[in-house]
Length: 280
Image 1 (tube, helix red, strand yellow):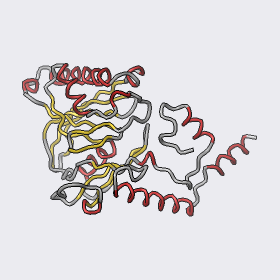
Image 2 (cartoon, one colour):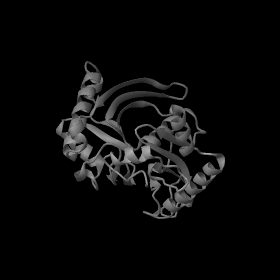
Image 3 (cartoon, rainbow, N blue to C red):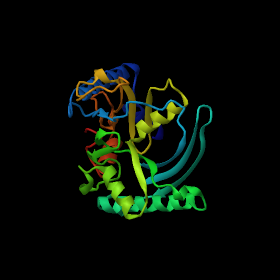
Image 4 (spheres, rainbow, N blue to C red):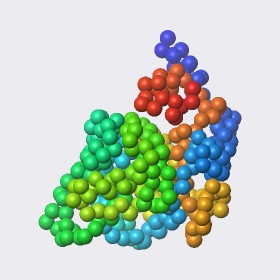
């Protein structure tokens, strides 16, 4: 009986090379459509406004905030540049109370700013760092946002376990900045990226040949370096680098060639966003 169940599941999930080629071709078509115009594809191909990636020579003290699942992480990083790379990295992970994942935007960002302020106070206690006027913060926000600059972005929609309605359409950087000010935390968000773009940037700091970052976690996504003149929906002057990092948001990708089992259907129906990332 057990062997038959496993055999049935293996058959339903089978991905022979011919099927994978069909899926890859469908993905390429969706990528081109997403680059062509806003809303042209389920794969949104969002502009990150990151047109330059690290060279490995950057140095200095920076703070980071990583929000993308049921926990968020705050960290302090000392970059040494050249062969030194990351000299030190202190971090703290904080669980997000479930009620905040479906409450209000001000409640969520207020909680995050409060925990960030505690972390900064602990890290800078007894050091001259506490006298610095403005600290720089990199904000990794792993949900679809529409950006018009590298340090701002409006939330398109929630994914994973979040469903805070009043946050959709708001600038998440402005929400965080307001919450930090209420905490008396003198910190400036220097960049807004998602985890796929962050993974790409972090890897490029160590290896200049890296061209893509891929995430497999609470969700899945990818970011890669595209030639700016290959993005028809780009408006305005092309960046001097001639490149643009694209946040694919490939979690929304669907192809009739992808196998969907009853387990996928059950998981999707019990999620907070049924039908958003699985087309049944």
